[in-house]
Image (tube, rainbow, N blue to C red; front, side):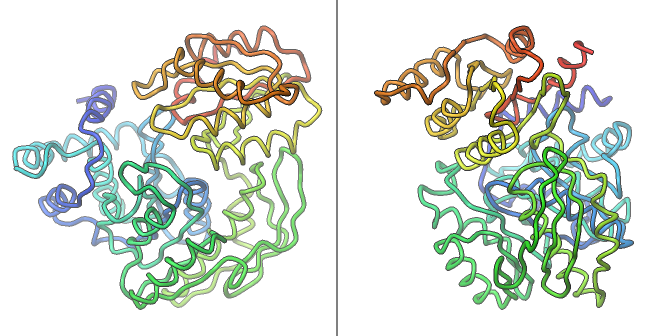
Amino acid sequence: MDFTQVSKYLDDALIFGIKPSLIRIEKILALMGDPQNASDFIHIVGTNGKTSTTIMLANILKRAGLRSGYHISPHIDSYRERIWLDGNDISEKRFTDAFNRMCPYIEEVNNMDLGGPITQFEIISALAFMIAREEEIQVMVLEAGMGGRWDATNIADSRVAGLTGVSLEHTDILGDTIAEIVCEKVEVIKKGACAAALSRDPVVLDIFKKKTKDAGASCYLYGRDFKVGRIESMGISGWVVDIDGIYDKYPEIKLPVPGDYQPANLSLAIALAELYMDLKGRRMDPRLIKDSLSAIYIKGRFEILQEDPFLIADASHNPEGTVRFCQTVKRYFEPNEKIIIFAVLTDKDYRQMIERVLQTADRLILTSSRNSRSLPLERLKEETDSVIGKYHDRSALAGEIYAIDTIENSLNYALKISCTNDIICITGSITNLEHVDKIFGKKN
């Protein structure tokens, strides 16, 4: 298969869904000689902030002289984005070659009675472990796909684990309460490991601290053991921050990504880097951290695609993320006319998200993405009307609301009606951002 055919195979594998079990990933890795035992791993779990923290951490470790990598999900434009090796996304050729060599093992597992065929995420996780071994990656940062306990990445014996924030998501699988969800996520903390938490939620922290105690793991908390110190905004260019780490202080770090939440993500990334380096008998050099982040790029996280008018792509896909997105929009663009293009997946708590974007947008464009899980446009319109109906005074809500069939047509219309000082934002799901670069490329 070539890369296009491999991508199609993986797209089609989505029909196998999510299967909470480690049996298939264990089996395929055993057939491949357990490649997950060849590298060190750092595990990141949580609801929001996982990808940003993962990318920051891998870049920090690379600048410290380690051959590092990361595995994230989902991707926006290409499966290449999911595996990063020592400074670059994996090449199409390398991805394709590894997948083709892994195919016989996939077929062998699928012929076993293991609760159904191996899932897309399990395949890509196994691929990441295999490539990490072959590329002699010293340490790979793993972003959990969902939860933690039964996530395919949890097959790795990670010596360091990080927890971002936790909110309600995937309740049909992880549980209906924050406590139930946290119990699933903290299961990535292994016996004798080091673990750090960014959350300030007492419910989350009680469970986190109990898990570390039961596992004999070291416990580090934001605000107590590490934190963001002085912080200075550079507007949409990002931040200059001082981070108080677990072992050292890191002054005047330029973080070139906007969003009020990113400095805290950075503090967790630095804390996890310190913990890992300490296991290796080393300390982090504050100067190297500055260098590692000077040109960092995080796709789809309040990503500015153009100016005049501003076009922003944001992957916020749950209520907590939408709150942060709306806060960020208001921080940087309070006086500007705001056009928000919004589509959401059916399995999200979309009513809360709709309400937030209604309160932020001046003009709201409702649409649907190409993803089969995207909430149908007619249903999205009905839900939006229902939310609006709760308000007696609607002056604080979007003044104009449109319903347009696709992301591409929505973007075309937004560009048509926008003026120089307006901003256009696409948000609601990472699937909304698929092909946006290609669509936008037609405009330049």
